Image (cartoon, rainbow, N blue to C red; front, side, top):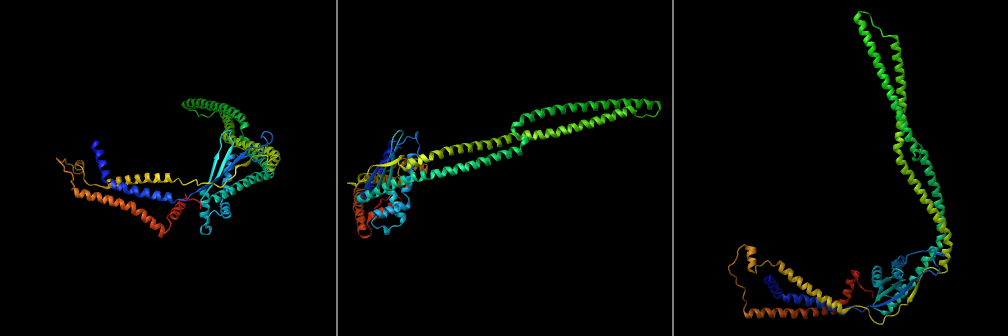
Length: 460
């Protein structure tokens, strides 16, 4: 384990120049970027959602919106495309707006706008609107426009909804009354169509079914008795005929027996007809009983819908009577409203960027990139450098190994090359960046354009 650690440490030291080179390049780039970043000024305003002045238990306002939901609505309306373009043009947020597409202006305004809500249980709802810009006057002017728009939107939302409440509830009462009538007719039509399979007559039909089954059993017993009587008569007749034939005389069926057999046939036909009639009625009863659960569910659904409509109708009537009072509350501004606690002011100093943090992050990223590059190079290097590599690769165990021995001149030349390479990187890269900044295009402009493309650029 110790040999492994020493081996990897030696690899790192051998490629230390790569680590220093990558770390230096990334750290230098981060430092240059941090120093070239423009100062950003932030202006904000603090607003409060004030509770209604009239308690809800005395007279509830028509418009009852959760404060957070209300803020979300206001925020979405505030950040609409048309509103942002109007504010950007009126305030003059951008130096050259004619060179920007409308989508670029909208995205830059949204990315520079910050909403922060602070609320909690049994606590007032306070929210902050802030805007970031390179000009402190512009930042304050945009926030002031935002505040004005928020107050106007709040008044419009509440008074506009309250003004439509009376008409809405009147229409709702009429609609639900018609729906109640239609649902009542549906229930009546269903009962008429399924009058023999309704749940309220299920007990009677099941009792009738039991009675018919008992009657059918009695009739079946009578049929069995008739069949047994017929068989007895036939046995007697057969016995008599056999005896007569033995004596040599002709045999005829006695008249009494024939009459009795005929009577048995008539009774049998009558019993079979009664059984067939009972079977038909039983079949109808069985079908109606089988259909009763489905009819009960369907009828229950229809009646439940009727009850739901009835409750909605009653609620609409009550809301209609309350709408006039609620509308009056909103028109007199006695309901919930938004107050400005802190007006936006021109900031005295910049709020960002944090140049030290950017430089530290660049240094850390450079160190990570250097270590990662060394790891990648070693991962791709398949050369044999240790006795254990010989055993793993060739499957043999060497008796002895000799390390690579460099001359003092080779060592000096290698160290001189690494030092020279590092010096070239540390001096050449900043010089190249500075030359590009002066002769090609300002690097801060290129960086800002790149950040805006990925959605994190700042408004100008």
